[in-house]
Structure formats: C-alpha cells, structure tokens
Image (cartoon, rainbow, N blue to C red; front, side, top):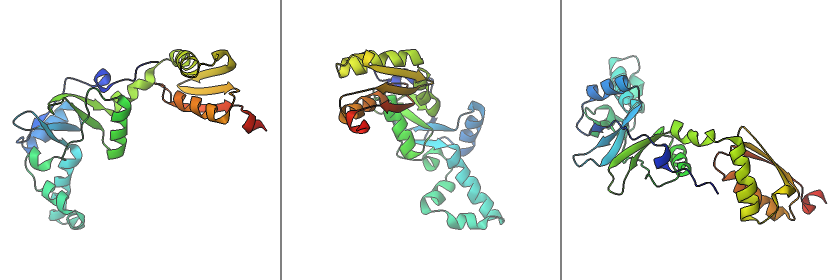
Length: 220
C-alpha cells in the first residue's frame, strides 16, 4: 500500500512570517511584494500565535470607508471582534488567532480537512514546540492528485483487492482515467462490494470511484 502523503512531503520550508509587533503598513507592503495572501505571526519566542491576512487588513479599510460617509452602515454591521481588529495597528492586533496549525507528521488529507472546515487557504506547519517549520497551501494539498493513473491502478489491484481482501485481481476490471476509478466485477456480497470501494476511495490520488460491481443481492 502506498504510504499516505504527509504534510512534510509537500509543505514549503521557505516560510515568510511577521513578528507580532510588525506595523500595519509593513505587513501590507510585504504582502504586496511577496505576492502572498497572509503570514504566520510569531511571538518573541518564535511561537506561532496567529495568522494575519489580506482580509484582516481589509477590515480596517472597510471601517475607514464607513467613517468617511458613503458606507457608514458597514461600521454598524461589524461585530465587536471586527471593530477591535479594524482599529488595530500591529500584527498582534490585526491577526486571526489562535492559529490553526498542522504538524509535519500529519497527513495531507488531515490538512485538507482543516482547510475545508475553517475555510482557510494556508496552514502554518509547527513542530512539537509550536515553532514554525513550514507552510502548506491549498495548491500543495492538491499535489497528491498528480499521481499517474497506472500507479493508482496497480495499487488498487495488488494492494487493495489482493493484499487487503485476498481476492484474485483478475476477477475485477479496474479502469483509472484522470484519477477516476471505474470498477467492474462480481464480489460475493454487497457488504464486500462496499468494503472494496471504500478502501479504493482512500487510495492516494483517487478523485472518485464509479461502482459498476454486480452482486447477487443487486441483481436478484
């Protein structure tokens, strides 16, 4: 079975960050020059305490526009947390915290789940002491789908069907195209069919599984 891709396998180690005391204008300048949308924020000990992003800085701009008149209602719609952030002048006051982080030893799937759950574009990668060691983005997560179709097909036949279920792979036809698996065959039971397709969905690089299996209960 192909080992699951880990965060350390795809993360970037050349990480840009800001100190909690970094000023608003300096953050804005660095975001623009670096062409990134956010930075991890570090305290005096190098611990990741939050993340400051373009959206955090735009909260201030929204409040300033509201004060000037045309969008005054915008300020009235802001919650207390956003108002405090909008009045901030340093990374410590502007950042979103606590930071959602991931460890190098966690799987890429776990990182993707965190990104989806919290609707974020990047995750600081920290070691056991909460020190910054890398960053993983949505683009890094999607890299696991670059795996060749032939390699995915071999793993399904040899490691899943034969290795996990001790079934002759010749009893199935496995077609993989662009990461989409189409599976034909006649497993003994509906339960076995479900178990095989569930395991295939967890194979690295699989985008979707099209179940074309025929079982006695399905064809009766």
